[in-house]
Image (cartoon, rainbow, N blue to C red; front, side, top):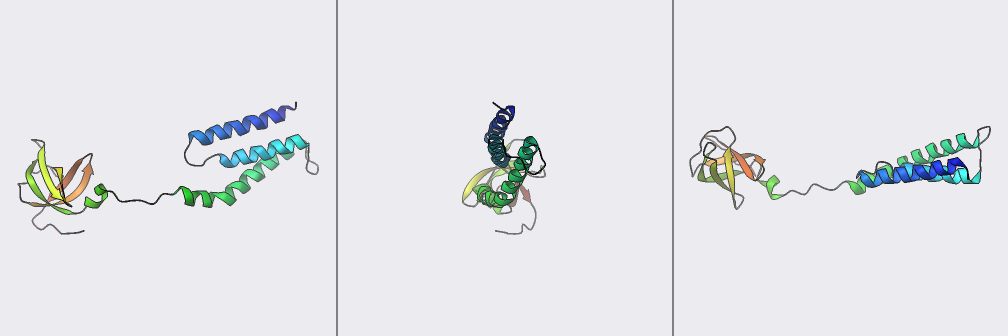
Length: 156
């Protein structure tokens, strides 16, 4: 058997395995190109004054590029998932009420926001008394980082 048949089969397997272990549709187009190179190799076809091997490489390159150009936008559209806001995203920027005094040194504090009570810490490290309105700045793990100010701007 021609060694190039084995090379094209190896390329198909290599690019196929690379596609399976990555999640971004990276090398599937090279699988198509390798398959075209294999078919060209098995047919013995040679283009013009090129050798059969050069023809196989040219067919590989052209088919891979064509597959990429023709299918990449379609694949990108199907692989892009819309961003679905979660409870975490919703509370960022919201105003809540401190239900348990926020004290970073004692690792204590709770804030009621968006109908739920969250563990909270002060974003700037200052103690915030219970009953105060605060604005959610950031989320770290399951804790809200909140900011106290005299005039908390209510945003939704």
